[in-house]
Image (cartoon, rainbow over all chains, first blue to last red; front, side):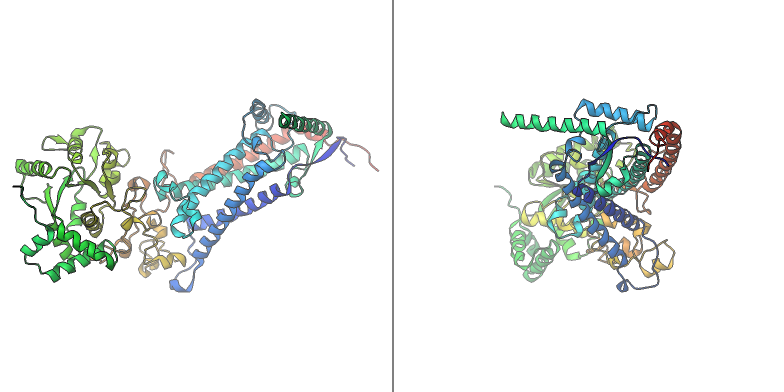
Length: 246
Length: 364
């Protein structure tokens, strides 16, 4: 029988709101991609009929628009959680302002991408490379929302999509916006491919329960790393408190 | 004593147009620019009190399709009225005078009505080498700058003057630029289309004549009253779009049934124009009604966003022309290949690490 000799502790990394965002977001993107493909190139499933007997393309578009609204507000909620959430969900993870973050990015490239180094990177939440890529993904979310709602504005009476309408002429018209919107969809598809693979990869070589952590929220972390993290967290709390006292 | 200029109504009287006829004309005009019945009085008042509007119409780098469209305004009374109520003092293609006489006409109008005349520009302006377009020894740029200085307002006819049209399409050999990029500090209206609809052209002029101000414009400088709605939303084939009934190719059964032209490249969903409402040639038809997809001719740079018969534009600069889907598929395949290689490499390079984690041991 095989057993592990490592001493691990469990750390609650992904809080419920983060997990909720993740899965709702995944579902929305899946629906948006499928309906998006159909809208871009509708299949010829109907012929020899009058238009007044069906509305299937209208329904596909309706699903796309509803999913888009859920996607957008879910995204806004995640931005909020970047300020309210725990240290693994905090906004400053995603913005590489510190030198240590850039150092870790390079470290991750060496260990996981180029595989010229073997010692795993000790990050508990996202590693720094993942974070900077998520920053790009968030920008893509924003751009996708702007182009999408901008194009949608003319079909709508409500105020919200109209807030985005002004961006379309800036891009050079609806055709360009449509092209950006369509190309970004491919970015999401490519991202999803690599994202899922990397989850499997980390789970396989690090055995910290990476894949299941986004369901339950807990990760298995080596005792020493967890202790170091605890000390860091306490130090942060103390310095924050000290700053408040001043 | 200063020569008193006759008002439009007075000129109508001289031509033997009755009061009843005149009011009919006013009502038509009001309907054209989209005011409700309470606004007719304003139109009547304007035409009763205002003299004819002096107009200089410049022809630069263009094909004259805007002029061709303009002279086909479908309501003859309105057409007549306009030729009587505006004073088309200078337009090289239509005027009787030629050569020095024609140029003298322009100079004369500019001097006499400095700050009052309307400048209509048809065509784009070359900037790479101004010699590409010269009239009477002056370059297009010089002429535009000179005429614009004394104009009350400027109307840029068609896609050439509004966005550069085909001359400005890649690689733009003459460096063609639309009017709004060269003229600053003057009210300028982009009457888009290639060509614009005749009745839209007339509607804009009548609006200026009636209200003495330019109409409300959208973000691209087009009058909102004519360019506020998408061709797609005013299309009589829209029901087919919502029902998912599409023409697959131009010679199929679906084309004969008049299904939606979305899949053969119709740019209606991103084009703002009145084609679906006002239509062309006495409201007879418009491209989509004739079974041809909208090319999006009232949008900036529509030549470069082709091909016309495909829904998504080609992306240039990839050696071969490709659509986003082809590129996406290629990059996706490469990604999956990369993942496979990485997965194999992981098992080779990280073998020890994985084995270290799985040390043999006893457990009860």
